[in-house]
Image 1 (cartoon, one colour):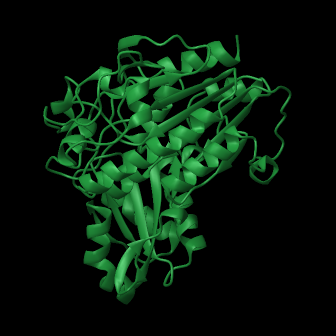
Image 2 (cartoon, rainbow, N blue to C red):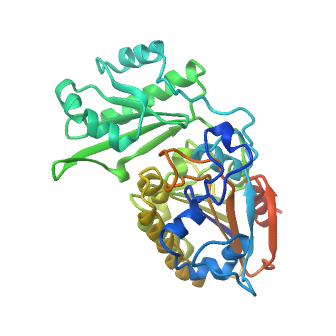
Amino acid sequence: MKRVICIVIDSMGIGAMPDCKDFNDIPECNTLRNVCEFNNGLNLPIMEKMGLGNIQDFKGVAKENSPIAQYGTMMEKSKGKDTTTGHWEMMGIVSEKPFATFPNGFPKELIDKFIKSTGCNGVLANKPASGTAVIAELNEEHHNTKFPIVYTSADSVFQIAVDTDLIPLETLYEWCEIARKILDEDNYNVSRVIARPYKIIDGKPTRISKDRRDYSMIPPKNIMNELKDQGCKVIGIGKIEDIFSKSGITHAIHTGSNKEGLELTLKAIKNEMDLEKIAYPDINITNDEEFIFTNLVDTDMLYGHRNDAKGYGNAIEEVDRYLVEIKKHLKEDDILIVTADHGCDPTVPGTDHTREYVPILIFGNSIEPKNLGMIKGFDFIAQIIKKHLLS
């Protein structure tokens, strides 16, 4: 049985790419280095041993004379700095055309069509905004009108927030599906529709992470489709099934936190996960090859976008602690990949993603430790998967 396990630490970029200014970012962006500096160093013994400190200088992460993994830097080929673009490229999809963004809010004809199709009677906001800020700003008006809060960001997203004690969660999901359909039918080229449920907890509007859902465009065929067609298991943990609109996946489970995602990844590696409960219907598993794909979103959603460099550092250290157990339970033919999909530097002005290089660490008994240097394209990961599981 051969397996590839890919863990994506969402937004853990390692330096601004040369074209960062085209994406309204500054050259000083370096999510991991700046988070390490802010926290006066991070304690990451496993990633350090794998060679993370050999990639560049990260405070608290020493250079390793005898690294146990391959290590390097990946440069994105696609035109974007968002979750969908990054994950798609990892699976072999290079996006030459960037997804559409709406710095002045969505056009009137789109909003009018959304209101008519959903019967929601109106929307609030319709502007780029920080999710936590716009919910706090408009919560009272939301309760008075029952209109959903519709907003975007520097990324290609159509986000809908409601208090689910006021508007049922099922209605929010239905409105998101309607928005996705309109955007696709009218060729708006929007990457994701995101359901942003919240509740009033201790008098404060609080987003409920476990009930968030992303409704992405359906991706072109990629390495996951090849694996599924060959009868392999493709297990998505976290928001993977949303990023790929379920395409190419055989089993999936959402998570409410990084801790839950790491626990489930460890269970999957130890063959302790009840796969029957999370299996898609009508799948045809005919061999033992397996791809486990995990997204750990807290670094991005809870800390990067909220300029919380302390929380970001704690989250990275939590990932490293779990890597101790994950590494311990890897089998002879397993390959473990640890990487990121873009940046979201909490120490620079703004709350949006940042156009950055990302690290890659590759560990396994069949992997010869070495410096991979600069790798052009996140699709390098698709090549590893194909070689290991389909050759």
